[in-house]
Amino acid sequence: MILRTIIGWGWSPILITALAVVGYLYEWPIEAVAPVLVIILVIGLVVAATSDREKELERASLRLKELGGYFNRRFSGDSSLSIFTIIETLFNIDNPKLWDWARACDMSRRIFNTWCASFISRVESDVRTRRLPIYLRTYLNELWLITTHYYEFVEQFYEVAQKVEIPPETVDQYNRFVVEYNAFVQDFQNNISDLRKIARTQIEPPSVKLAQELSVVKPVQATQKKVEEKPAQTTEHKGYYL
Image (tube, helix red, strand yellow):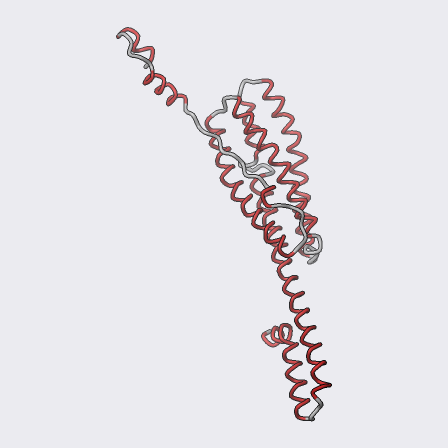
């Protein structure tokens, strides 16, 4: 194994050294040997650079596969951290207009989950056949599209939560989602930055956007604040404000 590695990475210096020694022993003219040695050196450098790039592409491909698999496990399907699962909790609120939006999201959820499952299946198939680096840009663009469309539902939920009173448990569930989702986004942004160094990609890291957390306002705290700000009342009214 060690010999194979040495030959694979150092065949050029070995061949140059061997020719130089043979040329010295047989007293070959330097004018004839030097061009051959230079050509071998250039070829060796080109092969080494190409091999390094291929290894970088392979590592980047596996990293992209890991990110796609993580997204599929944690943020789609029946995961509790899926934005669609969080939207489903809104059916507990007595708001027919909100139910219409949640139903539309539920229909989109089925399509989205099928898309994610298909993406992961194709990526894993190409990993087994060692074709993933060939389609690296294609899969990068597709994962970017998946996260972009997914963020649209995250953004819609955030806007709804600014207008409608959401149960505290739903807010907590969403904020847990935000923490883990933003960690994924940062890893994806780093992966895009690394890929831009070794492959021609048109995707900018900031185009994968972070989710926003919701502030939790507890009704009890709001009532207490109202009591503190309310001017002192007569004794018979104190029980109403408390």
